[in-house]
Length: 451
Image (cartoon, rainbow, N blue to C red):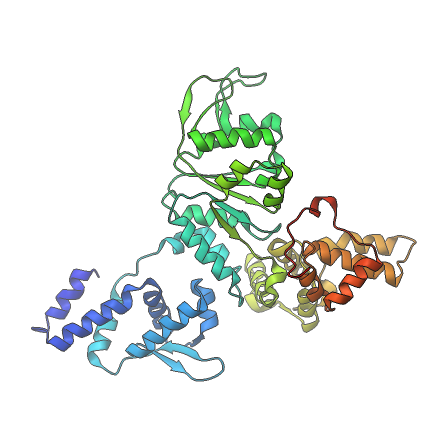
C-alpha cells in the first residue's frame, strides 16, 4: 500500500479533526526513521517474543544508544511495551487508542521497502561477526559513512579480521554497486606480473600473449578496485599505481592507446604503513592518496566477550550446512573457557575454522575441550610432543611471553593484560629473557601508553 492509499483511507472516515491530523503527522514522523520502522515491523512480526536491546542491536547492526532511543520512542507512542527486568526487554504492543491502532495497521499492511543493507550479501555476513562488544558496530557506522562517497578507503586490521569483507560492503552499499568489484592480492603479485594483471595487455605484447586481455583497472571501470595487502607492493608498482590515481588514465601493456577509467579505490593492509613511509619502503604521496579515510578492524582478542557468541553462531551455521538441527551440538563449559583463553592470532577466520573442526571431531552432542585444536598452536604442540627435548619451565614461559608480545604487536600494556601480570613484571621478564621485537616489527609505532 502506497502513501496515497494511506491518506485516502484516513480521509474516507470523513473530514479529519485537527487532533487526528496531528496524530497522523506524528505517526508518519515516527516511522520515517528506517531504524524505528524496522524495529516496529520486527517486533510486530513476533508478537509473542520479547527482546533486549543487545539482541536488537546485533540484529540491526546499529549502536546500542541508537537502538535504545528508537525502541523507547516506540514505547512512548504506545506501539511497543517495556518489560522491566535486568536486562529490560521490549515487545510489540496493541495500542489502546483506536486511532493509533488504525495507523499501526495501515503501516503494517504496507509492503516494507527492502533496504540496500538487506540486499547486500556482505552485510549479512558482517552482521554474523557482530557480538556484544560495540567495536564492530562502530566499524559498521564507518562503513556506512565511507559508502556515501567515492573517497579512497584504507582498511587496517590483523590477518583474518575481515578486511576484504569490509571492502565488499562499502562497494555493495555505494552507488557503484551495479558495477564490478575487482580484488587484487598485492602480496601474491610479483613485479613481472603487475602490469599485465592491473593494466592488461595487447595481443603480441609478449611471448604467450595470443589475445588482448583487459586488466583489473579496466574491469573495475565505474566500480571498485580493491588492493589487498597494499603494504607488500613494490616501489615500482607503487609509482605506476600513483600515476593512474592522479591521471585516471592508463595504457595496456604493449598498447599505445590511452584508456580513461573511473573507479573507486579501497586498499587493505596489516602492515604499519606509517613506519614503511618513514623507512622509505612506501611512497608518502601514495600513502596520502590511499589513506583518505581509514577504517580499523579490531582483533578478536580486543573483543573477547564476543568469542562465545561468535563461536555459537559458527557452530549453528556448521550444523545447518550439514543438514543437522541447529541445537544438535553445543559447547561444554571447559571448551568455552579454552576458546576464551586463546589469543586468536588468526582472528575470525581461525575461530570459524576451529569451530568447524571441533564440530566435526566431536563424537557426541557436546564439544569438549579435547575436541578443540587451534591452527597456530598445532605446530608447536607437534614439535613438543614428538621431539626428544622437553622444554623447561623457563623456556616455556619465555616462549609464551614472546608469543603474546608478537600477537599484540609488542603493546606491553595489552600484553600484560593478556598475561594477567603487572607491567613491571612484564618489563623484568623482557630484560631477564633478553627479548626484542623481530626486525620487521622494530619500527612499529608503539601503542603502549607510557612504555
